[in-house]
Image (cartoon, rainbow, N blue to C red):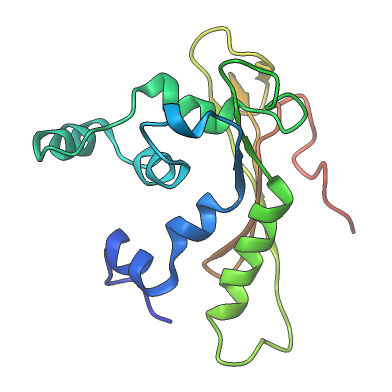
Length: 171
């Protein structure tokens, strides 16, 4: 599938990305108290400030940033008991989704796959948990690991910068 000329909505309509990504979360909130579904939160999560204002101006109610942060901060082991972080991501399901999307982009699965492992700095501003000064990048940062095959993202891991760039990979 060729998506370079398509917008986010068109891609979502073709492959059901938002529904599939939302299915990677478990929502332990009280259904009667939910204003924004997990799918709505996932859809809003990638909107920049300017786009969020435009969506709001169109009459689309948006979740507060504290609600959106719950997508990222909820932990599976505590989501049933934590009052504020009741949405938990299943990281294994997200990994499977990225690989499934990669495989679905081919008519038949490729015979060989070349993996490109990239670690890059994600500079921090403030006293975030896990911050670490990285001498190479000369800043406090995280050092996420990304695994690509061509243009396809297959895996992403947020890591602290006190690790070697190749940490988590195998020969």
